[in-house]
Length: 405
Image (tube, rainbow, N blue to C red):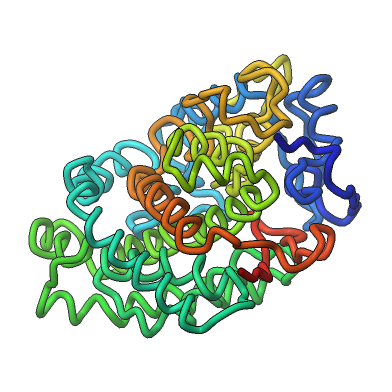
């Protein structure tokens, strides 16, 4: 098992506590906040103020109550009108994570059939073939390798591209956009430019799908809901699914492999496909690569954990902190698949629970055992302190992972 004391600690006062990581460990300040001030107002590096929510029970409370804590930046007022905040996104832009009811339910019902249990299971042979093909390419290229480029990136890229009906040859372009969008060390203008470039990619694709819809998710939406969803919203849906289905899984495969290389007993179990489900669920809880998800905005004056939250104030829910909370499971800072936790918040909670969670789980269930069977001697090529963890990113991960076999 791994605990936070087994890795080097590097505090960085420029990175806020809910983003700061010490390799696999969370910031020590998060544990203090969780115990003493689970809902605390902090100033972010941008100068903005936000409430940081760190305890499991309060994170669930916020995520499960869209009436009190909205995602779309709109605020009801006593007259019944709706005020759109300056930071609010316009309606029907396709980013489901920032939709509130009833618009959220309308769009999610359109997308959900593409991620049903039956649909995801039908993709299993395709995902297995994809993983095997990438493993053969990796083996042919030879040792050593950057694991991120050789395996962790191409597996979800190929699966997501096939699912959406986008070109795999463009993976380098949208991967770069994704990395920049989540990189807190970049200035806002650079990150927004990357977001616009990513959306522009989908905007160019949508007209072609209108004329000739394929079997991908976007083609399905055109065929089944063409008159209900315009080009702008369809492009936004594609951008969100490309972003969500790709970036998070890349980092789960990278960090998860690193974790297994440092825990050979669990790697051996995974290689034999014994307890794979429990190991992956514990990885999801322990690693929690999504730091906060979409900020919530108080839609009315309210109280949370004894704190008076004013209408219009922003809240950031720390998913890693909630998942390491002792209330969820004792010794939460230790990696221990025997705990068997299924109620973690790695995929969020409430109406915004990740729609692609079944697919992400299946990719990991296939990829990790296949990787470890193909390369039983896989090892890390540098000391842990030399691994380039992302210093300030909304999606935690590594920039590269040198391995050999």
